[in-house]
Image (cartoon, rainbow, N blue to C red):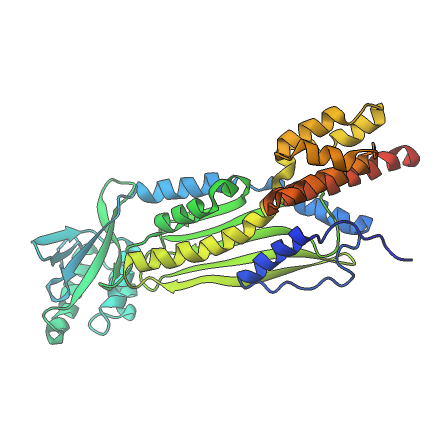
Length: 401
C-alpha cells in the first residue's frame, strides 16, 4: 500500500535544506520518499524530542549569566619580562613590566601554566612538587629553578592573565605567550548571542562555566515546538555547540548539528565543524572569523525559525474549530491574512468558490507564494500542514471513541 505524501518538501523547504548544506552539513537522505507521512511510532518519537526540548532551560538566560560571571572577574592581562620573574616568601609571583613591577598570587591553574610556559627552565614535572610545598619552600625552590633562565634572551616576555577572585584579590589564573588572543569566552558568547538575534529567544539548552579551568561549553538547541509536517526528510532539531577556554593551549571550537527524520522510525544526526581556531593572533582577526562563521550558521538556522516557532504566535487549531462549529471562514481568513501580512484580495480570489478548510489553506499558500518571501512561505506552510493534521486528528477522535 502506498503511504500518503504530504506537503512537506516544498520549494521553501528545499531552500532550508540547501542552507544547511551551505554550512557543511551533509544530510542523511530519507530511507523512503521525501514527504512520506510518518506512522504513529515515528510521530511518538518526535513527541519525545519536543518534550525533551521543553524540559531544557532557556539557553539565552544561561548565556547571559555566564557572560556576567566572567565580566565580574574584571580580567586584565599584564606583559612581564620572563627573566625578572621570582617568588616572594608568600609564594606570590613578582615580575617587572615596561612601566614598573607587579606582584600577584597564583591560582593553581596559574602555577600550572607558569611551569608549562617556562619549560625547560621549570617543567610540568616541577608543578606537582611546587604545588605541595609550603609557600616559603615553594618560593625557594622556584627561585632556584629560575637561575637557569640566565641563558634565555633578555627581551623574552610572557603574559600574565589576572582576575579578581571571590575573595576580592586579583591573582594570576593563567600564564600565556604574548600572542595569546585577548578575545575571551565572554566576548565569544556575546557575539554568538548577537548573531542569533531574535532567534536566541527560541533556543533551549545549557551553558556551563568552570572558573578553575576557564572552560565554557554551550549547546544552543532549536526544536519544532508542535507537530508540523511529520514527513520523512524533515529536519526537526538544530543545535549550535561550542567550547572554549581562556588559558594556555586553548582553542575556539564550534560545530553545528541537524537532526533529521529519515523514515521507518529512524533519525540521523548530521554535524559539521564551524570554528576551530587557536587563541593566537590579533583580537580583531579572531572575532571576525568567529562572527563570520557563526553568522553563516545562524542564517541557515533562521530558515527554519518560521517552521519551528510558528506555533508561538499562531492558533493553528482555530480552523478545525471553526469548521466544527459550522461558521464561515471569512473572519478567520481576515485574521490570518493580517497575521501573515498577506494580500487579502489575492487570498480571497484563490478561496472563491472553495469554502472548506482545505480551500482556505490553499488560498493562504497562494497568498504567501505571491509575496515571494521564503520566511513568510515557511511560516504559512507550517501553519497549513499543522492545520491539516489538526483536522485529521479531530475527525479521528470521535471514531476512536
